[in-house]
Amino acid sequence: MTGPTPLARRIAARIAATGPITLADYMADCLLDPDHGYYATREPFGTAGDFTTAPEISQMFGELMGLSLAQAWLDQGAPSPFTLAEIGPGRGTLMADLLRATRGVPGFHAAMRVVLVEASPRLRDVQAEKLAAFQVAWADDIAALPEAPLFLIANEFFDALPIRQFTRAGDAWRETMVTLDGERLSPALGAPMAQPTLAPRLADTTEGEVVEICPAAGPIMAEISARIRRHGGAALIVDYGGWLSRGDTFQALARHRFADPFATPGEADLTAHVDFAALAAAAAPAACAYATQGTVLTRLGIAARADRLAAGMQGPALDAHRAATRRLTGADEMGSLFKVLAIHPPGTPCPPGPDQRAA
Ligand code: SAH
Image (cartoon, rainbow, N blue to C red; front, side):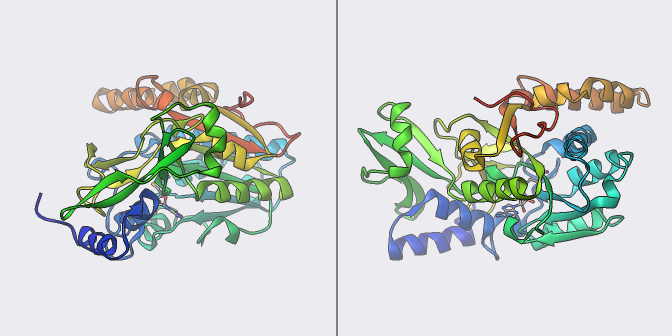
């Protein structure tokens, strides 16, 4: 440690002045502060960065997810024009692979209007360069998307949204707050309070259990669902997490290693597992399907696609390709920790892949 980061000093001053802050406020400061925030200052992706995402591991991820969305578009009568949107597109890799894979889908490219929802001006530049061959527009949020059929994908977007964390105490909850321990930022439990939004969780948790909520996720999901129900469309939401939040999943990643989330604010990526039950509830009454990433990619034919790509490879490139395929689908790797939630209008076919009804 080389002393507190500039952001640590600023957050400590805020807590000293106005008292402990929620994890959500802390996460928002760490990730989005315009001067010192993680997304404003870092290139987090790839081997030199802090983490590697599925589209950065293999082109097959964006190709197969893209073909699933294109099939949903065909199943709904190939509406034209339609919005092809991605939220949190990172380096633009997923969208580039999706666009290459869907070139052969008759009418798809002619009908699409590509819109990227991205908060970081720096990443918008990276995406513009990667997708220079296409006409692409950017939006600040979902509400700014055109009123049109919406086919949308998100990978590792919802895990970056700020969460609040609660520990059960009788029929009340103690919220995890960020406070000062001397000069150090450290977590502490607040006083027990009733939490009406957590009332349903009293039925499935016991004393001392930890649950997390992501206040920003529900409204975003509800807006996506409303557009899809109004105009047609489908969404594929991919992330790590599970059905119902359970336990402390707040984590920091720096240079591909777990780090102390309170030690270097602004310098590590902060995330939490996504609660897909909460996303599905926010999307109601749209139809939902839910399955693991491994299951979805297998159903979409990753084995055949991997063999096809392997035919042109040898030596270390072939070994890396085989390892990437395992990493995306293996039960002990990303295959079971990552989940896919599909949203579509009731009465329309589900995008292929996650096509089992959610619980
Ligand atoms: N989907 C990419 C990147 C995941 S990282 C991949 O799989 O590689 C999260 C992405 O979401 C980044 O592009 C980040 O800048 C963006 N992001 C984070 N919070 C956001 C917000 N509130 N609105 C829009 N984009 C956001």
